[in-house]
Image 1 (cartoon, rainbow, N blue to C red):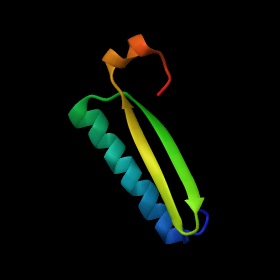
Image 2: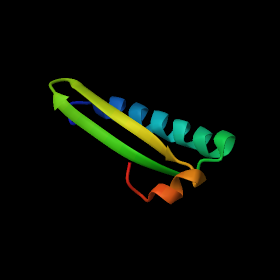
Image 3: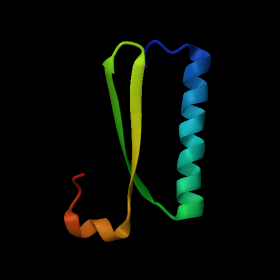
Length: 62
């Protein structure tokens, strides 16, 4: 992630913002857990895990 150019950073965050807005507006998802993993060179993952109402009975863990 730290190897992204300034333009790539802006594009990346903009994309996450758009996805999150659609999750909220179209799917009604109010809470999301974000996980980021960078364990190899030039490669990373971002997981956006929605927290649905029915999940509350399982606690706040994934």
